[in-house]
Length: 126
Image (cartoon, rainbow, N blue to C red; front, top):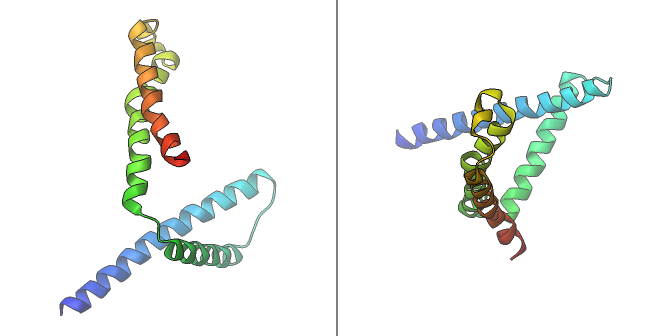
């Protein structure tokens, strides 16, 4: 019974990810085509999307990248952007937070955020 439940769970997980990714990809393609004044049939777009997903999945399965390495490489800088840089951006752009601008500590926070984000460039080029 357990293998049947596992197969159903794997199938549902795949379909959930695939359908969500397909909808997102189709939305981006339709939006970019609409901006250029063009359109595409949904059936044709679904076939293109399926082919794109197949090729992309095949390439990823062949290259077999380390997902933990990717999370480690990208997670830190993204968290640094959220914790360090976005508040400093908000201080400059949001009128209610403007009273916090002009402090020397803001420069320190931005510098520390940039140092934390620089880890992604170090890992890419080393």
